[in-house]
Image: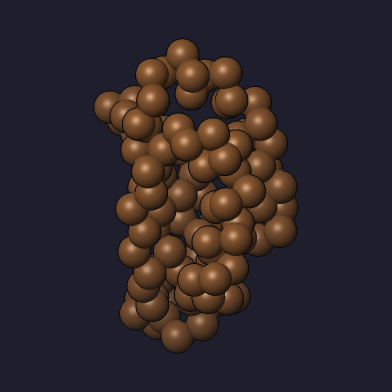
Length: 102
């Protein structure tokens, strides 16, 4: 299943910055495992966004629980699961097998 995850900072930015390196390491780890497809900061610098591919919500929750931003209670998460109905030809069918390529 695909998930859109919005991380919203709930602590001062100085506290967030103190954990950026470990958060980036976490992003790299889960990107290499195929669980994070794309991630980056929000344009207003209030948090970040992740598009994730996990077998189910339990796997996503376990992954998020290991993030230093979660461990140190620096963010709130808004999570929306979805099933792809269409995808760009370049978007892997591995992540959205039911989506029609266009």
